[in-house]
Image (cartoon, rainbow, N blue to C red):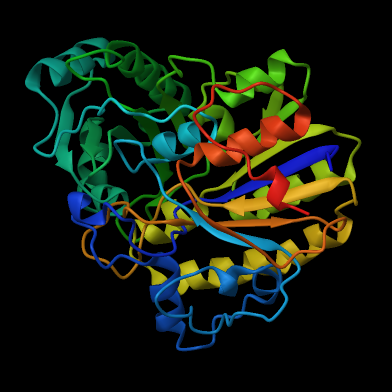
Length: 396
């Protein structure tokens, strides 16, 4: 059947076990969901995700607390990425039919002096730090220096990102955004080709009170080819982004969208959109799993956030209409028990549910992530680029 609306929710960084090429990324053994389950020792309670098939996804060992069901109400599987990186941009673009096959710029030893000099000359501010660093540790260790000097805290990670942290009493938010827009403009092409420039505002007066705010803004490379969002939009199918979706695609292919301040806000916005008369494609990213817990290696927080999401998922399932299709997935892993602070190369879960469908269907292993976008296009009768294969016929 064809659905009037498709709602896709990306649980940012909630992987489901090491990908086939995990060793290439030094991520052998990573398992975000499995290790969160182990941490909670069977007390990870996700009844709504379990009901639609999370526990039925094929994996070497069950997720502790999330048992397989004899007849789940949804369809279940997992997806493997083919993009060169394991960042949010790579994952989301690949979902929408545009795998990132050209490696982006990575700077494990910090950014080149020429680039730092350009940032300093444009901003009129000195740059400090300039190396891979945890974002929360960066402001803890360098925030007081910034309060005294007004210097820019610039750092990176294992992904293709340049992040600038700024205490907003010292460096106002609009100034931070202006600097980040400039940095974005000079790092699009080689030799830099940085995937994302991220503004990281924070408040507080000392390391015990420094707190990042929800005014983060991602300045992502613009897709260099049409994505499935562009194809939907071109065919007159409404497209709506919730959370950082607009940032990830630089607004391309989206009719409109809404910024969110938390996972809870993101789900509230999704539920409101479903309750409304919106048609077409609703695309939600819930970033707290990644930004608040995965990178900070906080398994307790990750699991608590999953249980909060699951509760809100129950509310969403209640308001879904028979003509709606809900799909839940992730863009990469970020195992909160793994070494380091970076993303992990993992399979991602794939769940699909509709009140109009019988459920209890195994979608198997889908690769690339573009199978998801191909399914959305297939539903709306839009021609794709043949990168992914639709699994719409399996939803019956």
